Amino acid sequence: MLTIFLQAQPQGSSSMMLIMMGVMFVGFYFLMIRPQMRKQKQEKNFQETLKVGTRVVLTSGLHGRIAQVQDDGFIIETLSGKLKFEKAAVSREFTEARFGDKAKTAEKPVEKKEIETEKK
Image 1 (cartoon, one colour):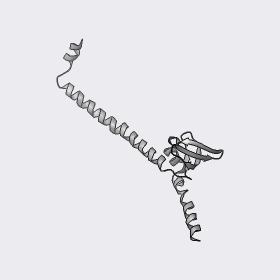
Image 2 (cartoon, rainbow, N blue to C red):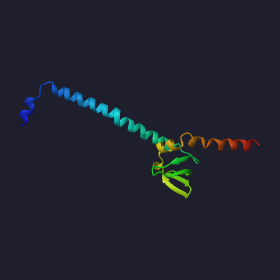
Image 3 (cartoon, rainbow, N blue to C red):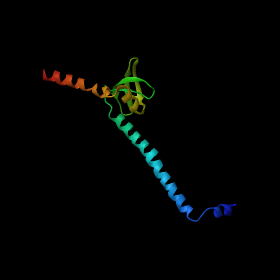
């Protein structure tokens, strides 16, 4: 049975098949693997740069403000109290979609007030 399949293929098709497999692998790498790695890196950088007072949205849909930053997670202050969550629970996409630049600018007026009070 194997000899039937071997006879059906022309001689040059095995090298062409290897080239096509290589092209498919490169295509999958640039279309699927590389963008996913970039997204994971951005998410990790976002979670590492979060500071106290930043408004965030968690993957579960919970909205809150970071009250404390710990090594293994965050203490999130919500309307119902303070809750502890893992760093991976904070979603960059949901936070940027909900708050945009407001999440980052929420810290700046606090810093300006502190500078003004120090000058007086």
